[in-house]
Amino acid sequence: MIDKNTIERMHAEIQGIMNAAGAAILDVYEKAESIEITTKDDDSPLTQADRRAHAIIAEGLRKMPEGFPVLSEESTLPDYEERRQWTTYWLVDPLDGTKEFINRNGEFTVNIALIHEGFPVAGWVYVPVRSQLYYGWSLDGGAAAFLAENGESHAITARKLNPEAEVVVVASRRHGGEALQPMLDKAEARFAKLERKSIGSSLKICLVAEGKADWYPRLAPTSEWDTAAAHAVLLGAGGVMVDAEYKPLRYNSKESILNPHFHAIADDGEVWKELVL
Image (tube, rainbow, N blue to C red; front, side, top):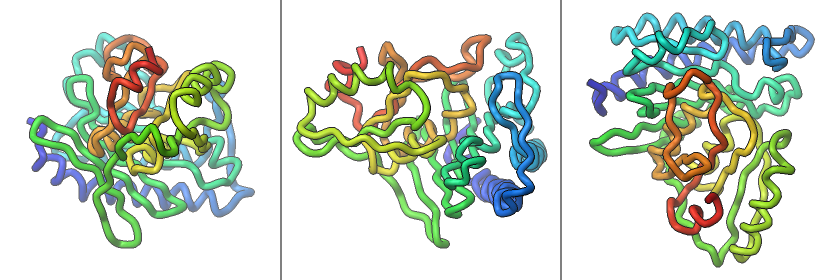
């Protein structure tokens, strides 16, 4: 059974795993000349830091007493016939924002999510350069999200929409610009003022969870491990993630590991349904 006590018990161990993975990543990051880049089957870059973080996280999670399967971006993807039997499992992206890592802008994250019956019930997103940890959980018994930094942890909450004030949309620097523009034009006509922010990796979803943005529309490819941890944080903070039909984003529900186009939204409501549908 996954409940609040289970999540809280796991939290200390996850923090230790995150810190170790983050330290391994920074060890490579701080020695720019040591970054070794190879190419994965999907033509995305794989760094030495990626591999180190994956090894640390996979080992740490497998040692935990629950014995849940671990699915990582850097591991072999099991056949769906095997994966569909998983009620609960870990979904990991050991280094999200590899291009941000290579470009040395600090906007990369370590991501661990706990998926239960198709939904991310808990997630941890660590920002090694800033020593920040976003984490959150969402269960039948309640939900909460937090940001830990400078030795302290405080609750975070997705903000309420005020259409008469500035509405902040966060987007990728590299993906989906042309496809997104008609929707942004529609939003500009709907809201008094629309500000666009760009940032890398799963930090886009975390900005929505933290109350610093209202909307993250993603109309370009992502994989389930790219979103799951931050998705859990957003749910804990009171936000939602929906697909193009405004249905909750699910995990491990099909053979492909790719997400559909989706929207991370701070304040669920009819105004967003009008924009999305």
